[in-house]
Length: 259
Image (cartoon, rainbow, N blue to C red; front, side):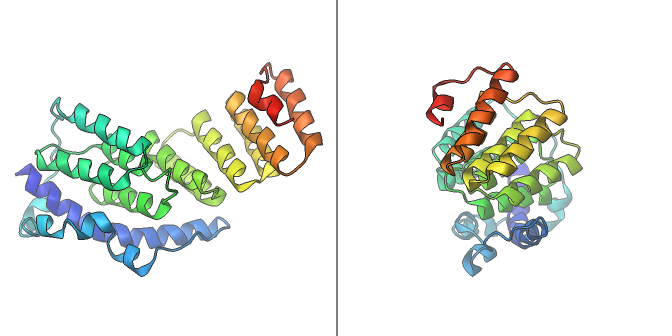
């Protein structure tokens, strides 16, 4: 029964994810900034795993099925589940997004990277990087292959918190897994600098973005402008307005508001 198999695999993956999140914290530390480690309660099992234990317990006797990898096409109904999870993610309703993922499994459908990515995205408004990372490691334990969108979602959670090393870590992790670093990833990094109020670093990343052959857009430039404006560096704001015009990017209302 694929449904029982996935429930059991998710239960095991949840425990593995807690351990992997601690390792990720150390990896981020090696990038130059130690983010807050999860509390003891968070490190063990988060809300979704603990209150679902009774539902998962009945599946724990199917250990032999853990080796079974269901690789069938998703039924058409899965699109409705994905749309629901994505809408909940936009509202930052992580608990409800997780419930929707479980509902998909309970209907006998196999979750894909897009479903996990949507749940990870639900952590962005709340800046809950610990929760987002645990979902990534569950994917890994279940052999669900992450996509570029998965890594962008993880980057976005870290960026929202102004965690530049964490954002860079997930970009690098995606690159290691053969995910192409594109303009969107650079934009997320620049946004992380904006949140952290690090103008010089934002400037560095937009330059690296251009060196990599990615053309900055108005949003990226405004992020740099805003960072310098927030720190009162008006000379840099004027400099970047000139740079934008030199790149053929017309400043908009937001741009001039920073001047």
